[in-house]
Length: 212
Image 1 (cartoon, rainbow, N blue to C red):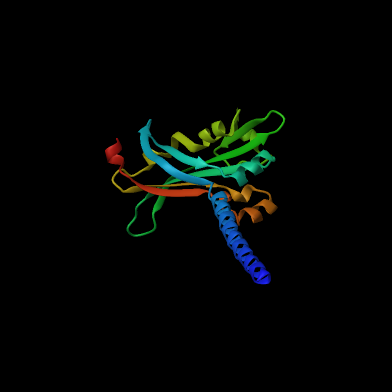
Image 2 (image 1 turned 60 degrees about the horizontal axis):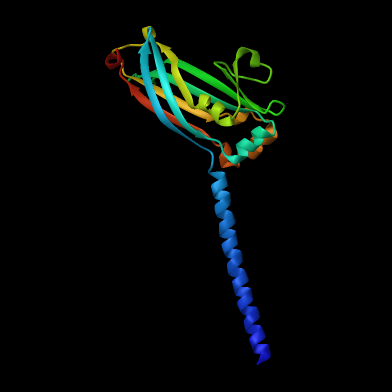
């Protein structure tokens, strides 16, 4: 009788242990998924405007960096973002004609000595040796630096004199975290992490006659 009870307790303990292991595996998997999905970017505003014969763009992003990206920044890795905008004119007989384009490049880095965040902004690609051509700003917090990246205000993307007011136009907008600027080992590792896959695209129609 004692042996039977002992076997029952062992079996029950084994089943409870196996159930606990399954629950633990599910919990860990859920945490991993939550970790992987913490980076996100959404386009809140994409509004064209006109001023001084220029086509301007006002945008607002909801941008959040995940723990993998923040950890890399704190450890001294610079992170690059790129914003592209194109103005395309519809052509029924051929592919759309590009009549305007602009790009904006951001380089975000943490400075351990000063405990401050440095953001470089340029209309040309930024490299580690080409920071002189960019505008540099320093911030006390990461949130303050990201607020600059999140918004492009009165950004000139085309000259109105080069646009055909009678034709239909489109604006194509893209924002992304530029993984190609990372060191090669990080590029390989980032390819398997959702935290680093940050990009958003949107296309809107543009009626120049209504805006003027």
